[in-house]
Image (tube, rainbow, N blue to C red; front, side, top):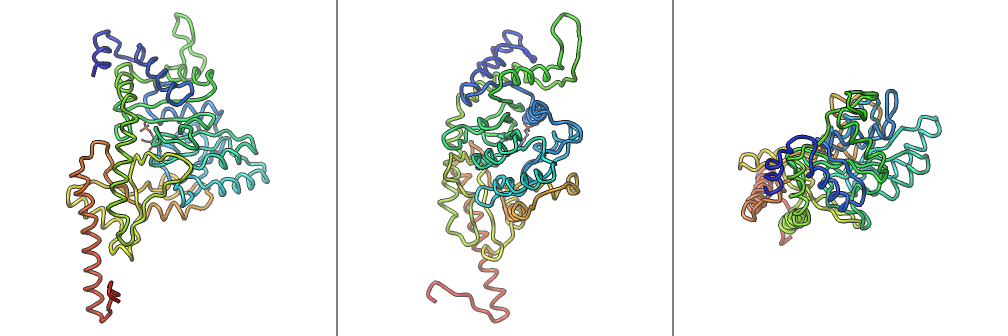
Length: 380
Ligand SMILES: Cc1ncc(COP(=O)(O)O)c(C=O)c1O
């Protein structure tokens, strides 16, 4: 509130002002790379791909299991996404599949212009083998770290591995500016270029002269003020999200047919969203039935992202496999995970899921009895 008030008092309300510069500096100190504050994470991906030289006719490799905002900027640039499946141990881009796909493309001299890696739900993809595969063919990497601010891989922050990375401060993210994004790169000139493009690419001088196409993609000083305040609470937010995930695990892991998103040993998973898979035959009801039951109890939950190759928008595009992502989508549910979720509200979510399991079990037993089948009991 203090930073926002300052923005109003000093009358810096638009896309120039001291909070923007300060927010970028503070973000740079956190991630360790120069940063440009933008209007959204999508804008950061768009400008990031532009920095990597993606243009009409190019192809860009992209995980199929993600939010659509990862893939759309590829099309904004006239290029074409090629979708790759996930690894079931991280839910992120499968490094072995990526290596195979790149080898396949090298053989036919049709390598992609860039590879996008997404860090889903607060967990980093396995970056070492991914970077190794890309370096072999000199393919640049864009990290979509929209969901992963605060997470680490081998001790380093998400977003510090690729040639360029994008973060989001959308309202649902671990910290927010109401809407906003950040582009980072170790190449300071690229970050300056992104800032230039984000402010309509106006050439130096008093005339409104433009030699390149630009965008209206800059963050406002008011929102940067919110971002500065949010950076101060980021470590606390990470702790809160992890505590929520821990409580869900403790309470629900023993229920039949539930398996939580794996927590890879190579880094810190913020658990921006707490996600789990439902095995219908063991749990007794499907993922959709569980979502419906929670909804009836006024609890909002969501399916895991619908893979891009299943989207009407993208179903005709080339891909490398997709069955792992399809399974995660079909069985995956994201539970209420907001940092402000109270213990009693979380307990209500837990109780509803436990009751759904118990109800499903008794319903199954009832159906089985009516056809003369007896389930094993603890005393058997
Ligand atoms: C994986 C992923 N990429 C990109 C975005 C886009 O970010 P924004 O909403 O800030 O444009 C989001 C979230 O919205 C996201 O979850």
